[in-house]
Amino acid sequence: MVTAYIGLGSNLSEPIKQVQAAIHAIQQLEQSDVSNISSLYLSKPMGPQDQDDYINAVLAIATDLSAIELLDALQAIENKAGRVRKDNRWGARILDLDIILYGDEVINTERLTIPHYGMHEREFVLLPLAEIAPELVLPSGNSVKDLSQNISVNAMIKLSQ
Image (cartoon, one colour):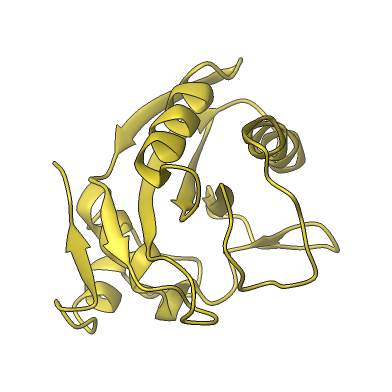
């Protein structure tokens, strides 16, 4: 089994319910066991600011699925929630599920980049990840704990435990 970390986000159609439903759906994946789930966080959008704030979380999952099989399963969950993929990379979305890490693998294909690009600067990834895996060391050699300490505490609001 490989431990993977999945980032969850939503800012449309009752985002808290969208993220909670996605967590439930991920818990039902075959050959997989969710081992830890962060609190929910409220964060500003990365892209255009004329959209609602996001609800974000990160979960850890032990899985026998390959990285591509896990990606396919997560995209099926997004599609079931009503996700429509658009050219606007930073636009509002009903559900966004990203594989942040997949074991200590480095993957760079047309469909999948792991570690997730930009995760080092994204507070909505690092703070929830640091909550559930503070001692985790990324393939780059950086520790999640060190990276998360460089983030302003005002960057996000923790909504739940």
